[in-house]
Length: 327
Image (cartoon, rainbow, N blue to C red):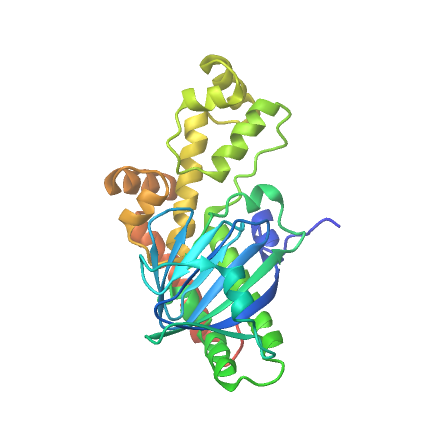
């Protein structure tokens, strides 16, 4: 069925309005330091919500990301990752841990030593058929939504309910956890994609160009050059540049630049990462060149863009203080 945009909506807004996820909660884990687990890459998208304590997340050998209570981590492509009580702590395969410490009837699992405690809600999710592949490809390997971001503050009533359910351990809690996770994960994906935009090219008949476009969308932060792209497509530089522009409408590096900056916009809208961190995550060598390029595309510097984006959900929560945020 064709989707009809509402008044004032463009096609992307209408699409994002209908994005839904269906979550499955694997377990509510009670960890005591030292602890650590690793999960191998799989086709299943995953999420983690840190309810209490602190932790360190490492994805595919990247620099560990420190997590605090209230942080939401989404791994939309199912990348392998490790979570430990702190950077450097040893980690075991999660399957081995679960074999020795099985999840109980209430969906809880306890593991670790006798140190400080951390509570982590872990699960998987699938995106509804509404999200096309070219939009899903824009999602980064890991989307860590900071507890202090405007988006999480907007969802604070739901987070409070999640904490209450954790303490209560009442029958049916797992089903409630999954429903709440649906809202958290859905809103995180929507907020990121609304800022990143789709940049969906028309169907590319040229298989070599289509392959490169997919690679760029999957890893825009990589050290790309026109020569590298041309080799990946099995073409000469001149032939590749001509065919890329004919298929996409922009030169290769211009398309890559916009991909990088729209990913940066997604980070600015859903995290409190510094401008320097975001510049590094999106393939820029320094903050100054990143800020200049961002201002050129979006008409304002990264800091101003972030303030505008994060003010929207906060204003929404003030105008509807007693209503549940809409999924």
